[in-house]
Structure formats: C-alpha cells, structure tokens
Amino acid sequence: MSLYASMTTAISGLTAQARALGNVADNVANSQTTGFKRTDTNFVSYITRSTAQVNQPGSVTARPDYTTSIQGSVQSSESPLAMAIAGQGMFAVASATGSLNGDTTFDSRTFYTRAGDFSMNSDGYLVNGQGYYLQGWTADAEGNPDRSNIKPIQVDQSVYNPVPTTNVTLSANLPADSTTTPAEATIQIYDSLGRLHSVDMTWKQTATNKWQLTMSIPDDKTTPAPTRTIDVNFGATGGSTTAAGTIDSFGAVVGSTLAGSATKAGDPAIVTFSADFGQGPQPIKLDLGNFGEPSGVTQYAGTKYTLRDISQNGVPQGSFSSVSLSDNGDLTVNYDNGQARTVGRVPIVTFSDPDKLQKTDGQAYLRTEESGEARVNDAASNGGGKIVTSALEGSNVDIASEFSKLILAQRAYAANTKIVTAADELLQDTINMRR
Image 1 (cartoon, helix red, strand yellow):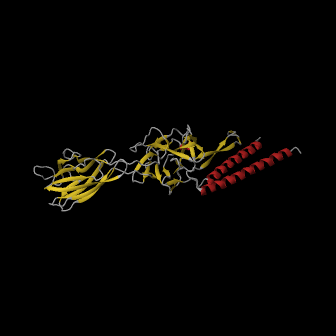
Image 2 (cartoon, rainbow, N blue to C red; image 1 turned 90 degrees about the vertical axis):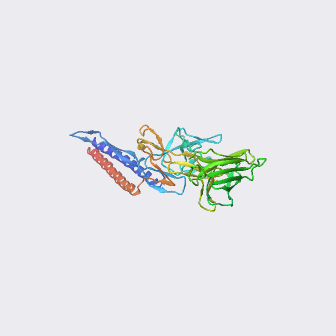
Image 3 (spheres, rainbow, N blue to C red; image 1 turned 60 degrees about the horizontal axis):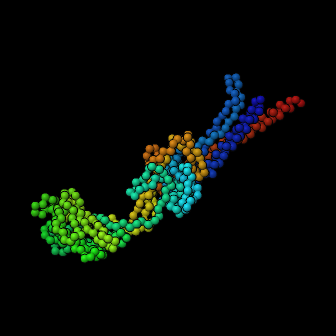
C-alpha cells in the first residue's frame, strides 16, 4: 500500500538527512584540523516502480562524497620541518607498531597524508601530530637519493667527523714592480683529528717575473725539519709565450716534500707538499690557479702583495645543530662547524583518483583498487605538487557552506517527519473506517 511506502520513503529520508547532518558535524568539528578533507553528502534515489501510468514511492540514501583532491589553504608555520603540498599528491608515512631491540617497528602498510606538521622525535624520526612517521628516499654520501624504495627517514644526530685538509686554494696578486720586501700569508689547515695548524707562506722576488715560494709549518713533526722552497715563473719571461702576469712554470725545488705540477697551458698550477702532525704524512695540494690564465695567483702592477682569498677543504669535528628542508624535498642536517649533509629526500605520491582512497584515523589514507597505484616521484614533477616549506595545509572546510548545509539538513529532516506523521494519521483514518 502506498501509505506504508510513503512512510518507508520518509524514514529513509530521515536516515539520509541524519547522515548528512553527521557529515556536517564531522566537517565543522575538524575545520581547524591540519590536512583534513571535508566529506560532502551525495543523495541517491532508489525506484520501486516507475512507469507512464504509476510511480510508487521509493527511497533515498546518503553516500559520502570525499574531497581528498581539493586543496586546503596553505598557512605559514614557525616550524622548519613543517611542510605543505601545493597541488596534487600526498606524503608517504608509516605507522609505528612498537619496538624491537630498541629499534622502532612499523606497520607493513604504507599510509598517505596531507598533514605535514612534522617534528623530529628523540630517535631522529620525523613524526607528524597524528603520530605518523614520514617516509622518503635515503641519500648516499654525495647527497643523491636512492629511489629504489622508501622508508621512514631517520636523522643521525651524531657528530660530524673531522676532515683533514687535502686542498688549499690561493688567490692573490704579487707586485710586478721591483720590491725587496717579502710577501707573507698564513694558511689554516686541519689534521685528521680536527686540530688546527698554521702554514706560513713567504713570497720573495728573485728576478723580474720570478718569485721564490717558501712554506714553513711550525707544527710539522717530520725529522729533520724539511725545507720547502720552489721557484714560480710568470709570463713575459724571456722566451715565454704565456700571457704577462700569469703563471708560466715552476722552477727549481729545494727540499724533498715540495713539488710543482707539470706545465701545460690551462691546467691547474698546483704545488704539492706534505706534513706530519703526529698521525703520519698528510699530503696537501696548493692550487695557485691555471697556467697562462689570470686566475689564482697573478703578478700585475703594484708595490704591495694583495691577498684576495684563501680557502681549504678541511673541517673540524662538528656537533649536530639543526635539520632543514629545501623546496625540492631534500632533508639536510646542519652542524656547528658550518658543514651540512643531505640525508634524504621527501617524495610526493600521486594517485589516479585520490578521492577513492580509504580514510583512516589521523587524516591518513590507504590505497584502494579504485584509487589506482601509488606513483612516487620528486616534488613538482609528473603531476605532483610542489613542497612549501615552513607551511601547513589547513582543512578545506568552509564554515559558511557547512552552516548552509546544516540548515538544509535540518529542514529536510523536519519535512520528512511531517510525512511520517501524515502517513500515520492517514493509516489511522483508514483503520477507523471500520467503525
């Protein structure tokens, strides 16, 4: 009977509007939740019978309409490890299940999220506010990411081991005008233990366009103390075709621990020496520029020695200072000795239909067959969004829109109750017809 059908239809309407109200409540409650994606309501009708002559009441159901692919607003954050995605894609994260022998164990499943409020925990892992561990590519010693697999990124907070000096680069100008005053400069170098030592250089003009370089290392433990002297010839010397003022060749060598590279136009003009600071001979190369080119050490007009720059590649021991994140997803550890080391890269994961991902707790998702395969790529490539550092993506909930939905759901629910009441009264009148 259509009266019963009308009541059933109205009851299905009550259920559908109650679900819609639940979606609105969930959206409003999470309007300030980082990375939250609202759930809209899609009403679907079901037909009992519908022809040209008759249409019987059917029913309605409310299905969730997910908005995972809709961007939320990006807001700045004071945290250097906070990150947001501008565009499509998600962060790959893992869920911790416990620990084994002091190491954190993880769920075998990979989760995905837009909640980028990451910070570093006591074990060096990057964990967001919902407890998910950021996954990415680990980097080799050169900082190149290993794209073969992703896993939770762990930052090594140990010290940065000292690096002994192996190369020194000198940039200076020796006065071309005759002078009897030697030019002096000091280089600071590090040994294999990170200790600092001085290397004293003295330039003495011996003839026109000719200089004698003497190097003295007070801390050198070599016995007997070596004499390190080498002649450096500049262009415009008799018979030379090298450009004036540039290094033409190396001359006589005094001492067995100093040597100059072979003369070849355009090649680096390198003086090699070694020193023993207690851990054995430490070979060092002094780069004076290129043969025949106005770089490094030159000899131009003037009466004074002009030092432009001295640099060397050694570093002392460094302690962990901070972690920083770049726009391409590189995670870098910074040390108090001025050094930095890239330990991993954060990729962006995209799906063919992200709205079909399965929602889980903490603004996280799981892959489904409908969502398609997870495609892991560098940020801002192959359809993936770019990483915005020191920023967070807010909820994509619009409070004004949700209040409008709330009013409609409330009115629709009340209207359906009227249908139930009217159908009930009509059924009662039908029963009373027997009297």
